[in-house]
Figure 1 (cartoon, rainbow, N blue to C red):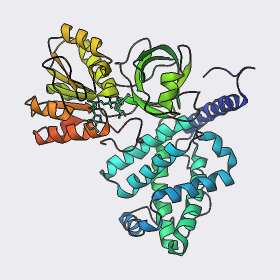
Figure 2 (cartoon, rainbow, N blue to C red):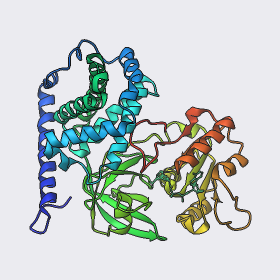
Figure 3 (spheres, rainbow, N blue to C red):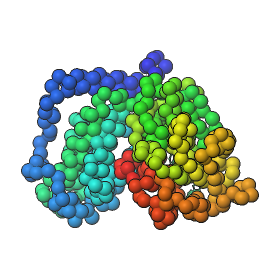
Figure 4 (spheres, rainbow, N blue to C red):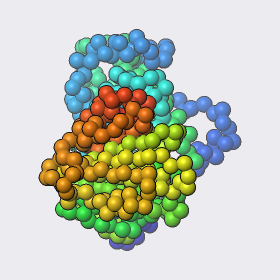
Length: 435
Ligand SMILES: NC(=O)C1=CN([C@@H]2O[C@H](COP(=O)(O)OP(=O)(O)OC[C@H]3O[C@@H](n4cnc5c(N)ncnc54)[C@H](O)[C@@H]3O)[C@@H](O)[C@H]2O)C=CC1
């Protein structure tokens, strides 16, 4: 972000000062850790009865599950939680975006994920460690988790009423601390990297009414792999972050590409598509995502992209195109509603013309395309191709398209561990690697 000056609004200047302070604080914590690695964590606020008798365990989870109707749907609980937090610690409001809708949905998703723990314990731990690393970009400090815990407990008391026993209160507290300890560990392990990467927009190309391809040069190298995504924030909407995939393989000049479609008014995508210009600044959170090429070059590949879900697939193709030898066959199915929506058609055609290992199949679901082009749902077009049983697959696009394609590929014998797909970008939060 730019330096504060006379023309910078006061709120932005305060934000800048806060982030500069955080950077100094991080440097101090890192120095302290290097000098005294065994140092114990800061003491917590007073305990609920029994919260520290043991660690969060299966019995806690079962108790919470049994009494879930007390606090679900989570909208009420979360509404109270933020109400308490901003009443007791008003300064915390400035760390959140103006509209809290996305935040509330995100938190409800995290509660569900934490309670249901759909993955293995290792996956759950990895999710919260990653979330802690990711939360550094929001300016979250360990002390904020204590304010969150206090707010949650008060909200539980309001929603739970007499049903909130001391035992249930302690179980919720242990569950929260289980997640928070992982998040703090994730944040601490990331102290050597910036909480966020600053970048400047170097290109902004419109494609049709609602889509833009942006290029952003980061001031410091952004350590990602082709196929990954990162959260992006615009100073036009402070503290609002949305995830987009990097649409190019890592480059020496630190330039990243993003494909952004505006889906509604007032969000980050709208700010990036309609109101962002070359020279504007953006901020990026740490990269994440599992759609990388590790170990997959032992198989031929099938890639399936819908709409701007093409972004990570384009990055993967760029990475493949730079490899000198050992090329595998790659079939890419690109779904769009109509030929005019296939915004990267020329790039794909040029790459296909130069690479013998690549075949690109456009699939149009709305209007028909040129003769011979498959029509209809992408998943069906993919299923009609193949065989894919011996392939590794990469799938990215609208959630239902991804779900349908993954199901079809699994039904055609592609093992689950060879079907790569990441969480729903733009709409769902960071939790859970296999969405
Ligand atoms: N911008 C980015 O960096 C990334 C975006 N995504 C996700 O990709 C999606 C792209 O959306 P748009 O560009 O608006 O795509 P779109 O709405 O133009 O659709 C693209 C293709 O997906 C198919 N499709 C759409 N909805 C479907 C449904 N319910 N069931 C089956 N097929 C469906 C369409 O028929 C079309 O073939 C978004 O959900 C976005 O979150 C995923 C990865 C990266």
